[in-house]
Length: 218
Ligand code: G3P
Image (cartoon, rainbow, N blue to C red; front, top):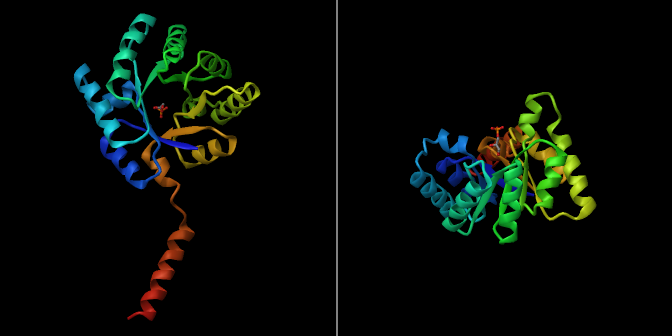
């Protein structure tokens, strides 16, 4: 399972990269705005800065909502760096754009996916990644993990190569359960990734080892 971090914060990306388990980064317009990154040139530069920190795929989302605009913006993003994946919304124009880019060997991530039917269309369009938002489904009392399960079954039935990128991951159990189901990738905040480290028996066991070592090596 690949681990992506879902942020545009360079310090958090560096911290996750330093941990040695990071496979890529996802961003979206809200995450860029949260870091105060505004204006086209600053936004493009920020994507390059992210690519220079990590080794894997970096999803950069188009802001256009029409096919021609998505193609223009996506081509510009893809030219920025070889690690850029063009992130497109799950709309009619977004699906058309995913097909356009996949025909030209440019990686895509179809985002804002909330149903198995949408994920099926993204795979048919040749998307590299599909991003079902599990946390936002949980927010409205719908089982986000069930959607991952449905997409896994459909993609396996037909050997679709589109990778299931579980997005809107909020906490450690989302990650563990996505791994059990077989999501190819998860993207979440740094806190969800580092949360996997934690167990009180690890802490108490280590404290005991240190105390015993110090007793015998005074
Ligand atoms: O990758 C999609 C993600 O950014 C959405 O997460 O927490 O805003 O639902 P969230």
